[in-house]
Length: 299
Figure 1 (cartoon, helix red, strand yellow):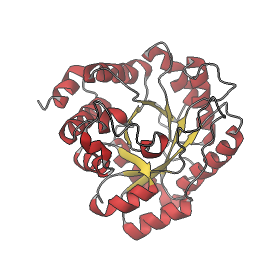
Figure 2 (tube, rainbow, N blue to C red; figure 1 turned 45 degrees about the vertical axis):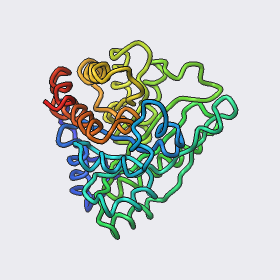
Figure 3 (cartoon, rainbow, N blue to C red; figure 1 turned 30 degrees about the vertical axis):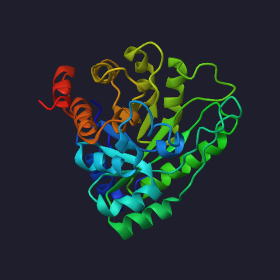
Figure 4 (cartoon, one colour; figure 1 turned 90 degrees about the horizontal axis):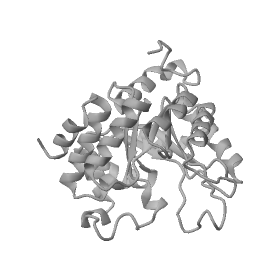
């Protein structure tokens, strides 16, 4: 492992310890991130929260906070408005504030995607100071290949810098989409996007798993360099398949964690907590899939 400093130069000396504390808290000292994603309330409206096979509890936003409070996670990512509303009852959850979002009502086929900033870092800082909530970082989504990409890059670069100035972590969701993108799951394209996010200065980049399996992620991990790659959880047919895939991504490709939403929150509370604990055991403790599955089963 390289002996480089974990602190980038855009973190001022006065915030070095804050940054290190946030990194330690989010990765539990492992260098890997288990991100519980709760930003789909905007991205997918209510489609992910009501329907066949979805726990009834998931229709209530508080279900997300109950899971995050009871489970072992790295960070819980959602919008500032929800954190401000529910945070008083869940003050110990490590929060990552998602700074932009868009709905799926306007499809990529209708218009290239664009998602712009909702909140400023000044507002994030004021919430952190006034509430004493456990806010460890911020997140932002970019769509490389969109005709609006330059606007999102400009905002993302500025927000990464401003987050670091406060000692906060910065995570970039990066999905190549738009008329110019022929296959958003192309491994070479995803690697290029990971390298792009490294140029934005982010601590972590969240990408979709590329076509071809875990070994196809190696190019992205190399391209990202000191920006750590995490993979979206997506949909899986079984818990066992999910855990096997994540283990392969961690061990064979060398990614630095995962970001999982639907696979967690669509389950009843107790099961969702156990699933989080299984994912975290794989991520933070390097257990094998069989042990992680046993944790999921409460063993």
